[in-house]
Amino acid sequence: MTSSAWKNKGKFLTINNQQVFVIDEGTSNDTLVILHGYPTSSFDYYKALPFLTKKYRVIIHDHLGFGFSDKPLNYSYSLIEQADMALLVWEKLGLKSITLLAHDYGTSVATEIVARNNQNQLKITIDKLILCNGSMHIELAKLRTIQKLLKNKLTGKWVAKLANQAIFNSNIKKIYFDAKKVTQEELNEMWFQINYNNGRNVIHLLSNYINERYFFWNRWIGGLTKTKIPTKIVWATHDPIAVKAIGEQLQKEIPNNELLWLENTGHFPMLETPEGWSKLILS
Image (cartoon, rainbow, N blue to C red; front, top):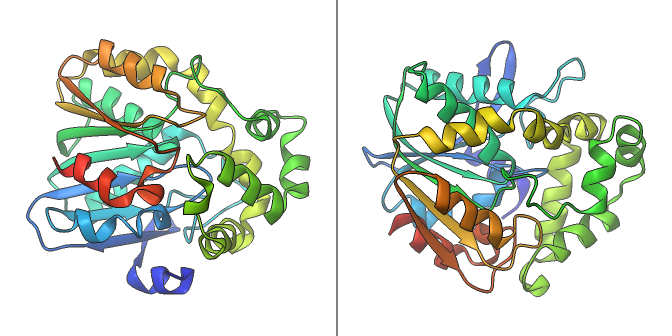
């Protein structure tokens, strides 16, 4: 699928004077909301969407700074603010109860929302939580060199300026289990969306989320250990960043959970093994 076809499939909502791109598909009364990963967008789910809409109305928005959403320069891009935006998107769509699915960067946005839920601060009911391959346990994650450079306040801006599609392609291929499963066309569309709305100018700001995972560790991991939301952990076994140990640790500490492994799959299971991943999500 092309970026333009994906853009035509969605719509824009105005939230706090910012344009937020939203995919809203499916006719079910049960709603699945998805928080996508870094540095990509809702486009990560274009292969899985036809499977997921068999059971759910599926809503995926591009976080601010990502995909087709606005990418303001005068913005902090805190995961706290991304949680604010997600909740406002769902409120604007009139959602009352949801299943919340999160991957990668989105898992930290989800843990902020869970922490608020524990304190009865939400207007929405979360019926179920699904966590997929994210480095919430940042101390267990195997960060890549480019992630370390981008999150650094001294080097981040310059690394973002120097980054090109060849570097991006190489880094994405390395986090697949089978690099042949990502096509050049997909890489082109991902890179196009990163650059859309001058996105390269904010990518080093987005990368600060890694530092926030350390700073808010007690709030976010603590939130998971106290949650009453039934949780499913769907983890790809061969993710070189959000490694198996993170999935295993989450299983130990989240009170009411189920852990399902997706074999022979890397960091982007919804793109690499969309049908197998979707089956576990829906099971």
